[in-house]
Length: 326
Image (tube, rainbow, N blue to C red; front, side, top):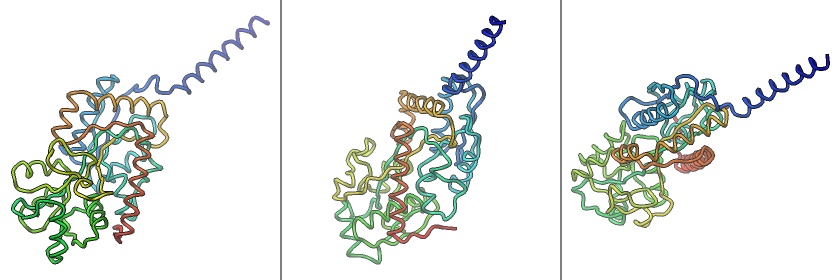
């Protein structure tokens, strides 16, 4: 009788130990089925390309298919809402640009998701600065000449922007320089650049990807970049700080997210995978061709960065009296 009781107790103890071990390390068997990566923008864009690169490498490493789903629309909000409501098991992920998390909350009154409460950041994968450009035939060749022109010709001082981060960045520029420059709305970065090329506006501030062609083709002239250091693609273009403007360091980024509540071991595994992948030579080469700088971060670092950006843009929007859209 005692022997049977001892065996029963031992069996229960072993079962409890096994259960406890599974709870301590839920990522041990992850992933055990196909995964999905949701993208809030159309196929072929920078976010989609990054998502496909990450997904391919994750699939090869973790041994499960990773399917891309493009749920485009509403400035990335459709995809973000979908992932926010998904099961927090690590099988539905989001690859997104910074605007979805740090600009949409500032520019829209209501969001179908909370950028802080509904997600756990996994890793910041890439970053990119912005470039201030004027028409190539313009006599303006430096920041000083640009500011002198704006102050001497207030009726001609305007810029093309497509709302969101572009508009906020230029509002910050106006605040730092004490200038008044009229905002002319366009649909996207390509249209903003075209307006400068056509002479319809004086200037614009856009990310490096879409403007690299016009710059190389001599259609526009770069005045400064918003990065902390000069950009390898445009080594002769000074930073904003070098041009005499402090507090104008701005970067966009793209990264990976999971729904809030995803187990920490799974987040860490995905974080490590994303950081490993972004260091691979073929991935770095592809990112360089898109004028994107490989970043990499821990989940905690990424989370702090997002909160800091949110605070920065929220304060700026209030200072600039930018009313959020319905």
